[in-house]
Structures are given as C-alpha cells and as structure tokens.
Amino acid sequence: MPRSGRLRRRPGVSASELAIRARRAAFNRAIAEGDAGAIAPLLARDCVMLTGTDSAVISGRMGQVKVWRREFAGPARLIYTRTTERVVLSPVEPIALEHGHWDGIDSTSDVLTASGVYTAKWRELGGEWVIEAEVFLTLG
Image (tube, rainbow, N blue to C red; front, side, top):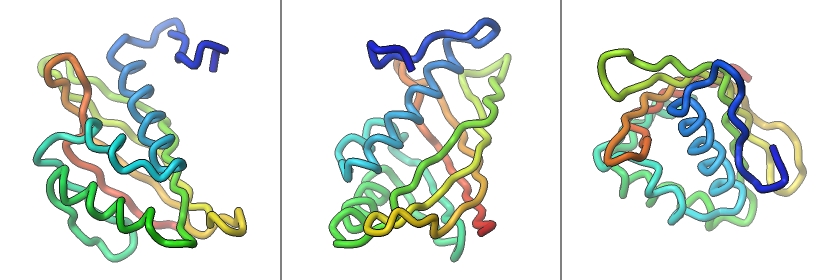
C-alpha cells in the first residue's frame, strides 16, 4: 500500500473493484481494532451473513454489529482477515461478487485457529459499496 494509506489503482482494475477492495480493507481494520461502529457503514441495512462452521444466519446490519460487539468484548478472540482474490462486477447492475479466503488468528497467541473461503455480494448504494450478503466456509 502506498504511504498515503490509499490503494493504488492497478492497470486493468476498475474504480468499482478498487472501491470494493478498499472497503474490505476497512472491514479488516475494524475487526483488528475491535471497532464494531466502523463495520456498520460497510453493511447494507438488510445484509445477511452465513457463518463458516455452524452455518448460523446473522440478519441485518444491527444484528451483525451486535455480534461483532459481543465478539470484541471477550478477552481472547479471533482476529479475522479476509483476503480478496477476485471481484466479479455485473455489467448490467451496480452489484458485484467478491471471492477470497479468510484466516482467524488467536489474539493472545497469534496462532492460526481457523481458515476457509468466502463469497460476498456487494451493491453500490448512494455512491458507496456495501455488503448485502456473505457466505463463509470453514476448511481448517
């Protein structure tokens, strides 16, 4: 990342893809810093998350923020990092799919505790990309 803290546009990468990647980086920062308030603006009001191991369904922006607050309150927690591998933009609607892998590192030992893959559906609303749905699969 350049010194300014901004992502540099690579040749062949659209402004929309760059914006989605930047929003994912902001989500990762919020998780690392335990900042549930910073997660809220990244989510659509009626977003849905399907968790990786037990397939729990977390519905709505506020439902997800509540879960993150509870997660961040614990003395030992996992710090999740989602790494974007590919973004597919729709040519007909302001929507996109992000595909990638995720890691969960124990905050007290720095040991990789869980990992897997994910897909996220994004929508551009009012000039900002927000997550409408995320599905996680635990592989390790």
